[in-house]
Image (cartoon, rainbow, N blue to C red; front, side, top):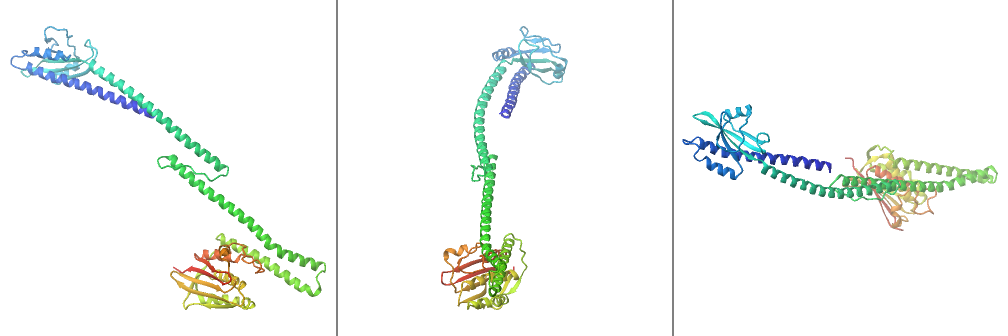
Length: 451
């Protein structure tokens, strides 16, 4: 409001000053025009004949004029109330140089404040004297005073309108700030589900937009923290559950051995069982550590181009005995020249986990390991004709510690497929499952070729 008021006052002063100068300049120009006509009359062969006519015309317009000589004596009109001509030496110098003297506002030498001009006239190219025309400035002053009143009224009206508009703006902005304060308080209390109205016409709108983005990110972070906390709790529960059985078995065997409660012929079997349960616990710890390393991107892949038949034959040979125990046959189908781009050790880990899973849920069946190139990808499939997976459970098999059939797979922790998912993702690939209950399962892995 202060800036507006100051700006308006400055503009008003400049405008009044401009109008003031313009009005006086117009009046001086009018007097000069009459002066030129009077001088033209004086320079005729018989000067003074028509000067009386000018007196009448100028008196009607409240303009007085005199003709004076070089000694400042009034030559015309002979009788009148016009005061003596009192020009300063500087003003006389202007006239003597043949120039017109213009005084817009004089308050000392005349009874009234006037605007006057003094113009030289010559006789035979010699300075004979001058003509002085004067007009009161009351009319101009009245006009400027009226203009000042109008400007003051305009300023007051504009100030009132600006004040009302400013009050409206301040209330609007204060309400927006209060909404932001309320939203900030909600966030400080842990309520991140807030949304401020946004706009594109001022900084408050930009701030609201940034605030909403911040709140959304905080909400996402809070949800992620909740998910991590739930995962931590679930992890602790799952690990405790998985560790309880082998630890109970080991504790029972040790207690039986210490108290001689196990017969001599069963001791070797008990020790073997304790050893197997110990290995099972070590496997659980190692798989969890491996899973966490993979999930947190702490695993570095050493990618190379691998012959597909070589890779699949390694899986076939290592799992031959395990498949034979369930009377399963592992078959390898590759095309000549099929090359898989990836980390050898991690690809073996992926295929071992999937194939072991297939052996676990297949009896007297066939497990096929196949590869073929499709576009920019190499496709690896592991297909069995076992018991299959219920369609409702397909999306859940990638979860850590999830088991599709709790009655099967003693010694399995449900970590294998979670590790498979993470490792395939690290290879910039994708894995999906096609299965139907009672009709077998097919794992499809797509890995990009080397660029």
